[in-house]
Image (cartoon, rainbow, N blue to C red):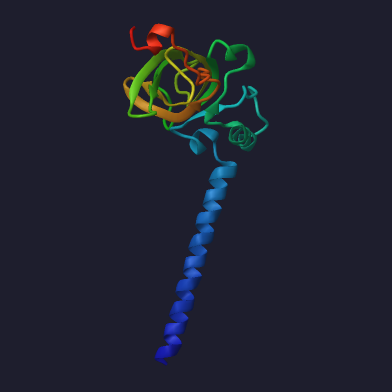
Length: 189
């Protein structure tokens, strides 16, 4: 009898584990597919490859568009490539409704350590919003190619959303060829 009960108990435990995993899977897919974008992406800034439309047919369509357009590598546009500037399209998602009409967007170079680079005030359209979308142009000399940056949204001194990204593009071109004058070559200069 003891073996019979242990088999039943093991079977019952396995049944409970499979029910729990199905419940969790169902919850995860429900929150992903049927959830609000501000809940799915809360606390994150999503940088997009291009500006997204202003309206979507559903929350799921919005989430799908954000996921398919998000990036963490930015290339300068063709017209900005020579100047060394990058256009950043972004959407910030907040965990709580924003109780202010202004947020601070700050950038840190995190390539080696964490160094403040620049900051800018951005104004929201309405209080209580949980989503903020805008664009900003980053340029030299503050920003440079092959650098890793962190972008932070703050409200009243509190961090409310973050992301990190790489700026890519053409850096300085060096031929590797060094030319010396006759005096430099002889060590006299």
